[in-house]
Image (cartoon, rainbow, N blue to C red):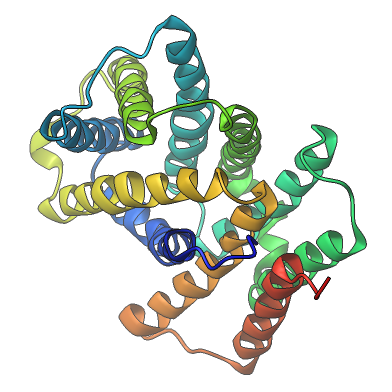
Length: 297
């Protein structure tokens, strides 16, 4: 972490940890009645509209040029179309616990990619921190590990695996180009609108006869929540943090998301919080501390 206290950075990372901890629940509610690709299309279009209004109000909306548009298209495809899109599709069939287990591999993937693309050097401290956090997630869901091999879940596991890899590559690519001058809000607008355009085509191809009247208010409310908080607020915070710290430091928040998801299950669905969960939280917190701690020089 930077030597000087960066309040905006800390706030951004807190937002990512808290908000994205609620998105698994939001996605599962959204796809109860709305086909997944329509759900992501609406989510991205709403997010793009919100940012467009903000940019107009600030008089900062402009054409970014073909080179930058190509970069935003790549990020859009990797992080929004593939990562968010396939996660949404996967949650049609995967239980939340199994989704959390598989998603927890994300920091491991980003750690390996960061080393592979020379964004950071391999260190025992980094590996230990990632391993501790991942162990904490496995500890929470150890009773459901066998579900990964359940043939009924193989399609969902495949889609989620694609999503995780895409998110990892998107994170690395975003970090690679973050040193270039840019307007983060403007870039996000292009990412969201491009993703919405691609996903509406996918939606019309896969669900040509979708009946809007069957979509529930509850599911639409979930999509709106995902758009405002999961996309606009959290994605801005994620990209902001990514410009200032290493990819692994930001990705480790995936473990915090798991804690939030389990807490919501306890608070909203009256699920039992066991001693295993307490132990897992301790492991995750230690893992986050190890990743981010720097001794006195």
